[in-house]
Image (tube, rainbow, N blue to C red; front, side):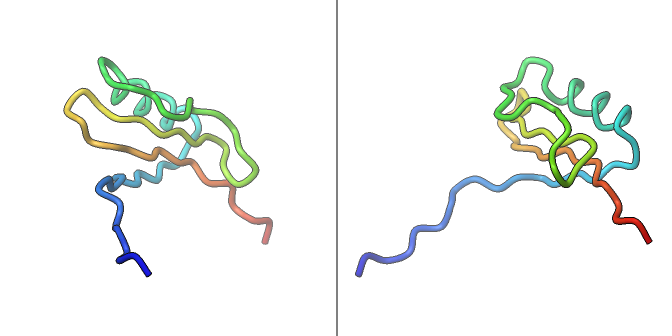
Length: 69
């Protein structure tokens, strides 16, 4: 069995409160960077996106949908 190889890439997870805030932060971080997943609505999030900023740091920006109480 081959030894386990850990990922060499870690993401900074950034939870935000509103979809507008998620988009603002995402586009600011993405400037001169590379988008892996455009900011968009998903099943669990109002907005979620993944990118690598201009300095090579990977980010996940997320505005979660809250379950109904």
